Length: 163
Image (tube, rainbow, N blue to C red; front, side, top):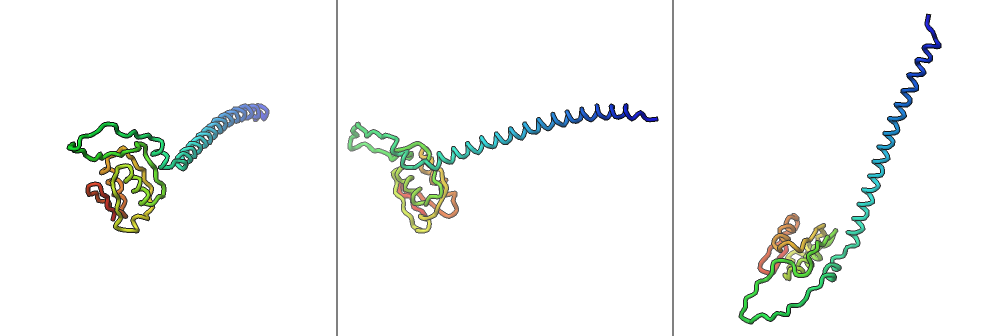
């Protein structure tokens, strides 16, 4: 004969333990989900902050914020001076987002004291995303820009010709 009361007690004890285990597991699951949600919110907020900083950035601001003192040293007339291959004004990177190549090259020309000539009008209106690093030598900047398939930049002295 089966004792129903004893079996019921045994079942009740086992069932209540399982509920606690399930509850504890569900609690850690909820904590994990909450941690993932909080981390995601922080990541999105950081992304928005970076985007706002990039959008608020204007290339002209860098050049205005750097003071360049004129040289007070007189150079004798017979001294040979070489053109510097590094940027003159700003050492801060300039980020161009969907800007025409003509605008990018104007910034490069101003930074390095070179002249830019476009032999193709379509190339001048080509919009690019480019991070201009004035601390790099001019030939490296030209090499970086030449990685774009649509343009070909050739340097001849202090003239950059763009095809």
